[in-house]
Length: 154
Image (cartoon, rainbow, N blue to C red):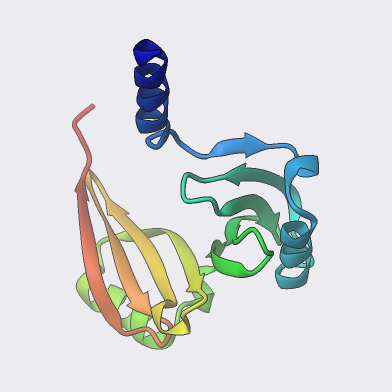
């Protein structure tokens, strides 16, 4: 009996660190799939997961670009992120990059949107030689922070 309890406890403790579980579309609640269709009617190639916090994650393509969205079990949209064109960056963000990262190339731009609209932001990856950085801007293009990353030598 004690071994059984210890085994169950170990499974529960170790199980909380597991990555999101892949789900078949048939295993996703109807409210969640309806939430995706409402928020992103043009979503294509949808793949589902359930993360460790219980949210349903949809990975999909939107206008040919990578996107993902998270939904609660009742179908309420929680957050999303999608790749967007550089031209969609607000002017102040573009100006900041030109001034402070003139020698860098923009690798990608993501639009990150949350249920709390005050947390919406753009994330931009810039790269040059063996260094790159991820820059974060608010929805109006105001610089918020930088995440430095040094590439390891080959």
